[in-house]
Length: 405
Image (cartoon, rainbow, N blue to C red; front, side, top):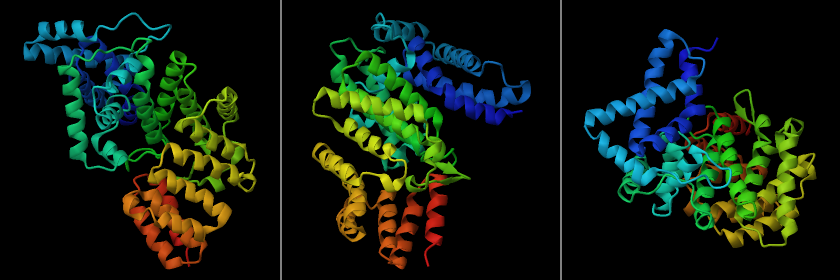
């Protein structure tokens, strides 16, 4: 039987965004929603240990959080003001089409264009993803104080500007979706390779929620290529989840059991990629990334991978997104075609911009290992281990380092 502590942890992953979204809709205040939700989970730790886990943890948490929020409003003696503010600013319009989802409303509120992009992403990871400030700081490669200030400023802006808690109108939706996709991609990536040292290395709750919300957005914008591309990218990545960790250690792509990949998700992802290719329209960033993943998941064995096609797609991606991270990933494909020496020269040119990014050091370590430069490879692995926050990845890197002669 699951104990109370584990039950609360599971409920936090499954229900956090649902509880926050429900309270935001009712009270129209992100601060009240977040703090009441946190208090409800803290109460659950004590009550569930004494009384047992309730049959419907989500309903218990929502009810408890609602009571906490009402108690707070009463204590502040501002109940009427809060209710008026909620009615004016947060009363959502009629659902657009068939979409009526509190969490979708929450993410569009968190990603409102009145907020700076950094604030949108931090707020979404906190309110929708339920990540802690330290976890978000690791995801952004910034300090915790900066993340806390971003979240505080974003919530204050939403309140001061009376940003509505609703899915945008049909005419406003296309302009609003870019920021939402960026936030969902970050939520998905946090689930795909969790940054927290005390969390599961792969968080299916976050990847599943990101996919669910992306599906809803695609229902709103079925002809938007980047929405479709992001959904395909997520599906093709999620398809490999069960093969990515074994005995607490990350399993690299070239070592994964491809028979364990989810064939249904791969088929759906490939269909979406083909659907976009058939339009003949120039692809965006997410569509190219999805196409790269389609090539990887088409190979029955790592030796069957069409690296020339992957490199061509990365060349296309560099034109859309000339970031150092894209250049780093392109270098991995270069290593397969032109050898590790050529790739290492390309990677080393990124050192100034990516020294704090642990995949940079992982890539260098692997290339140096392939070139027989053991001591340098070991030093690069040490730096990657120092920067990595994922327990399964750390275990993998330690094993790879210790295999060096």
